Image 1 (cartoon, helix red, strand yellow):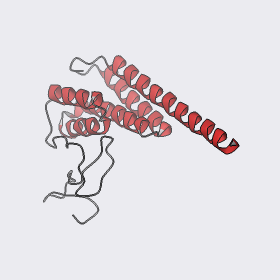
Image 2 (cartoon, one colour):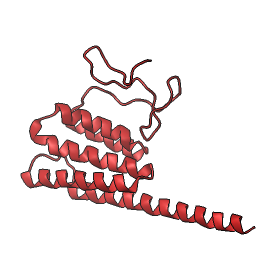
Image 3 (cartoon, one colour):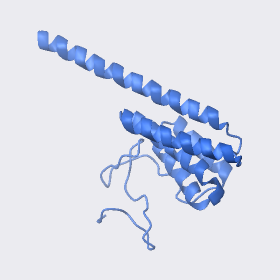
Length: 163
C-alpha cells in the first residue's frame, strides 16, 4: 500500500499494516498479531477485551480498544476511557524499554482517572485505585527488569573487555 497511513473512504485511519504485539508496525506482507475490532464496543465488552489484551501482553491493542470507546462513548465518561487508554500506553512504553514515556503516561492516565473518580461517574465494576496500582506495579517491575538486563550487559562487556 502506498501513502503514509491506511485510510478508509472517509479519510479515517485504518489498521492496514501488520503490527507486532507491542503495536510496532511491521513491513507489509509480514504476519503480525490479529488486529482488534475497529468498531466501538459497549462499556463492558470494551473492558473485557482490553483486560484480555493486557493479560496477553498486548497493551497497545488494549489502548486501541479503549480509544474507540472514548471517541464514541458518552462525553461525561471521556476521562475514564482516556485514562485507561493512557495506562495501556504507559504499559506499552514500559514493555518497549521507554521508562520516561511510561512514567509520563502513567501520570497522565492516573490524573484522568482521579478526576473521573471525583466526579462519581460509572466505573463498570472497576476499582480505579486498584487499576492504577496494578499498572504502576507492572511498570515498576519492567523498569527494574530492564535495569537488570542493562547491568548484566555492562557486566558482560567488562568481562569480555578484560579477556
